[in-house]
Image (tube, rainbow, N blue to C red; front, side, top):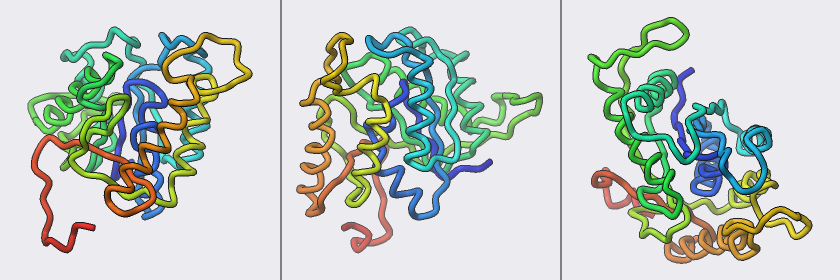
Length: 238
């Protein structure tokens, strides 16, 4: 199956938090979108790998994803080496996306920066025909995505561009809250973490509102780039 966009996340819920609104909007345009999680988030303070898997499936339905896969890398301990790169390459060659979205280049959680670099490197390597990969016993053809963008996570990194997600913020918030084990729940007796506070939950919305304010819309999500953005004309900008 060829997809238009594949979003990678170090953990289940990274993609929803970083670019859930953008994915929902692109799907509304008829784009085929998938998500690949690198780990099951098994080191998380709350919930479990099994719970996170169920939550990820529920979130995928809310957003309207074509597919969602998990590479099963070790949470906290995966590295950017040949073994891990090849597994990501297999996903890129399997789905042949035009656009890849990946973790923030620098963030509070060490897996986010690692995941960002790992996926970015794999996107380049996936286009080299002398790198061989097989999936389900069949040789894969090389494929390099046209564009690689990084969504913004915990840190308030200055975006290189923003996407108007007005009208899709409710889908994003429902997808985020599908991870009920991870976020604000006043009835929970599990340990408090930086992402379980009401303030963090509220910050998802007020960040989108602030980025939207800066471009004169209601809500927006920000991204950083690895190379210059290009437009055909000045009228392409909103």
